[in-house]
Length: 92
Ligand SMILES: [Zn+2]
Image (cartoon, rainbow, N blue to C red):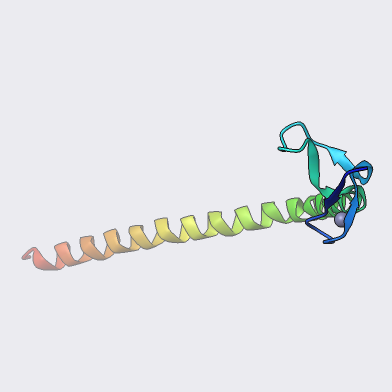
């Protein structure tokens, strides 16, 4: 039986412990099934966590809106200041 070294756990295991991968040169995945299952667990946990971060997005968007509003207000303030200066310059 052929063996292959897992790139994740660095253990040399029989090829039957590796998942198949058509794209790979030897036809098998670079990490063993054990590591893949751990990775997939991690991924599903991350996915679940992603749902929590998605809830936080509206807050972030609101913050961005505030920033853009602030910029608009600042621009308007500059314009008002310019108008005041122009009025001051005009005689009478
Ligand atoms: Zn492994």
